[in-house]
Each structure stands twice: as structure tokens, then as C-alpha cells.
Length: 498
Image (cartoon, rainbow, N blue to C red; front, side, top):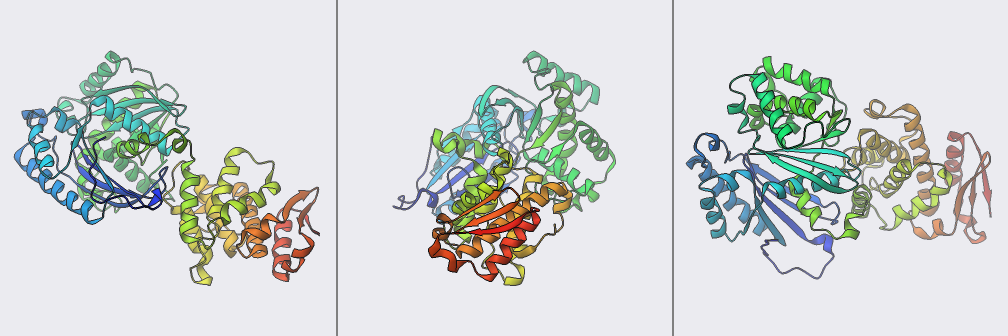
């Protein structure tokens, strides 16, 4: 791996390291700087420049002079920003436009003059990185990944946490206008022939098709806007084949001014939306995919994930991120894990999916304590619902938010938009998590000791709290109220034992 060190690594935790990736793509050049737990670091900085390196490639086979100048300026800025941010390790990669252009070496030389050692990724390496990016964000992904860039389209079969067959096709969004110039039917036949010749026809039958790339994410944002979707988070958003067809019809008659008026849509992506929708419609049909699922992670995150060891890869990214958030915003670092262990016996019959969400909720149980007391519940809900999580869908976010909201004193209501994202019975179950968390926090004062010396269990129709004789003084009137509230929600009585 080509790296550039701007400072000596300090003798601190690995989570302090700042990792940067400069991605020189066919449509845009982007710098992303990450910091945090290795399994799911947070984004400290993210900036892109729409250089359009591949826009003239179909006609001339070269990067035009204007795009080259924009790219040089972007690389100069990104190198300076990375230095100012004291990035520990900077990785620079280039994809189809630089790889295929006759004058691509000119840009590589400009990067080298700035001290950047550029990795020129092959189509195979692009595909692998995109596949790993999706696996990083959706560990149980089982389907086909489609990474639509400016110069190429990569298709990757992912299953059981691994990348399998992959292929690269000259179907980037900057090449599509020329391919679609004749007619839609000829374009569809051309794409179908490419897939069939490469052995990909029908390979996604009844599987999800995972979408990677800015143009496809923009399509999803358009659908979210038109459908009034309740959660403004693109990751794990689902598009049915019918929705894709509807988007194609919309784009055939909607004005550019109407598109520009949609706040979530990047103006730079508008010219590619129609072509991206047309290609997606053909791919879904030819692959036989049952639905599409948007991934906010792609090539850059795949590069980071690929550098992890087996133990790090095996970590649950949702739990890793929630634990990091809880440690940064909470009062006592160990509290979330101890709290989850304490309330777990009360929910012994849960399936693995609910157990995992409950654990994440406990890790976030203390994130609202710095807020104004009147708004702690709302603050906690906002963090849980809109946090930078992956490996979780919209319904899971709603349950997470409900548990934290209730635990911080929000009560037994489901504020908007939770009721639109998860069924009432599921939200009520999350309320029970919240009341159990609330009881544990009041009993212990947020400390580990009292929880480790006591138990919370279900014995028939009773919610039983068992304390050591020396801890009876901890059972105050406030603790009793929370004990009773939990038992009432569960349709049980409350019992104190010592």
C-alpha cells in the first residue's frame, strides 16, 4: 500500500490515527479523512471536486486540458488539507479515467510532484474494493454489488462476508450518453449483450442489487423526496424495480429547475441522472434482481476494510460505532456494556437481531446527559436515529431511537417519525428496553458496581430486582417508581429481593 506520513504516529490509541484517502475518479476527485475505531471510523472531513476527467475520453481517448487543470488544483488543495489535519496515513488511488486515458501519466506525474504515490487500480481491484465496502457496511450482504463510476461499472458477487466473481464494464456515467445516442432499445440490447458475453445474465436472480456510486445515490434521494420518506438517510434505502421504472419516467419529463429545487440533490449529479436510471433499469432486468439496496460505503471504505486483520473485520460495525459514541458522549466508559448484561436476563427469549439492537441502545443510554434536562430524551433520540451507523435498516434505527428516548425520560410515546418506520408492537418492545435501562441507570447512578452486584430477572409474572443486603439503601423511591413502570409495561408485578 502506498502511504504518505505527515507526522510521526503518536504513542496513543489506534483510534487517534487519522487515515486519509484521495480517490481520483473519472467524474470526481475526493478527499475523505477518517478517525475512530478501526472497524467503523468516523468521517472528519469529506470534500469532492467534480473534475470530469473522463468526460472527453469517449471522443478523444484523453483527459482534456480543462479537467487536467481542475484535477491538479484539487490535488494541491487536498494534499495541503491532509497536512494541516495531521493525517497519519494518506492513501491515493486512481481508477478508470487515469487508467485508460492516453495522457493519464501526466496526472500521475503531477501527483508525484506533490509527494503523492498514486495506486492505479485495475478494474479487478476496483471491483474488489467496492465489494468489500458493501460488506463492511452490510456484513450479511448476499447479492450483486454494482459500483457505477464515471468511467466504468463494476459488478461483484458478495456472499458470506466475502467477494466472489467480479467484472468491470465500460459503462460509466460519462460514457453512457454516447451509448444511448441511438435509441433506448439499442442501448438495452448493447448492455444485455455485454452482460451475457461476460456470463452475468441472470446472475442476480431473486437477489438484492447493492448500489454504489454518486449517481445512483442521487436517484435514491430523488425517490426519497418524491415518496416523502420519513428518514433522510440514504444508507440501506430500498428501491423496487417498479420504483426504478417510475424514476425513469419522472426524469424523462421533469425540468432541470425542478430537480435543482430539491435540497438533497447535488446539482453536479443532475446531468447523469437520466443515464444512471436507464442503466439501472436494464441491469435489474438482465440480472434478475428482486430489489436494489443503497450502500453509503464503496471503494474508499472497502480499501480501509481490506487493510483490517481478521479479528477487526469480524467486529460488528454497529456495536463498534455505538460503543465509541457512548464512550465519547457518556459519563462512564464501561456503563453501556454492563447495563446490557444487567437487563439481558429480562429479555432472554429475544432473537439475535433484537439482542443486537438492545445492546446498541444500552451503549447509547448515556449520550444525552449533557443536554438541557428538558431535552435529554429528544437529544438521545436524535443521536440514535440519525447517527453514523451502518449494518442497520430504518426499522432498526427506529427501535434504537425509541429505546434511548424512553430511557432518557421520554415516556411511552413514539415521536415522529418512529411510528412511520417500525410497527407499534416492535416500538413497544423497545420501550421495555428503555424502561429497563432507565431503572438500571437510576439504581446505579451510571456506575458499574451496583449493576454487577445485582440482578434483574423475570420470574413468572414478576419483574424481580435482587440486591445484596449492603445495597438496599440504593433502592430509593425514585428507583421503586422506575421498577414499577417497567413491570407495568410488561404486564407483571414488581418484586424486590435481597
